[in-house]
Image 1 (cartoon, rainbow, N blue to C red):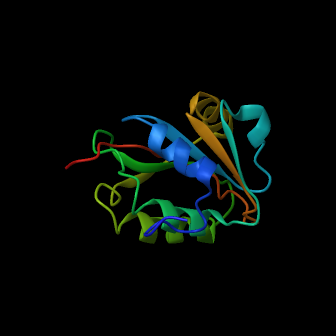
Image 2 (image 1 turned 90 degrees about the vertical axis):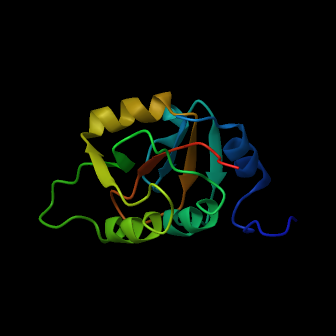
Image 3 (image 1 turned 120 degrees about the vertical axis):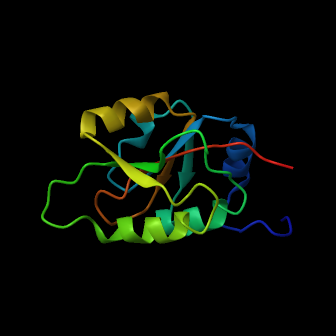
Length: 141
């Protein structure tokens, strides 16, 4: 164990976050996301929700200042957006460069982007359309 690091962050996930460089993206997939078939590097986070993981990693993970969005989501075609999206906004807004718009991508575009991401984290998130991609920024000293 390490001080100041959430126990939700596995050693494997911590390694992935540390390896990522500026502009690299990481996908947090819900329980229905085809994580294994889309991942260059797959990290299992069974039993974890995406909200809890974002709350755990964002104190350690700088968001990218160089893009016009905080995160990317998969387009939802229902009447109202998924409830988890507002939770994502609230979490992201607490961090530098997290108060930007959320980019929405059509399903095929989201999947293609996921295939190019540095890693995919497979979670047990049960809410539909909860998949999210975040992009790493620069650590400023």
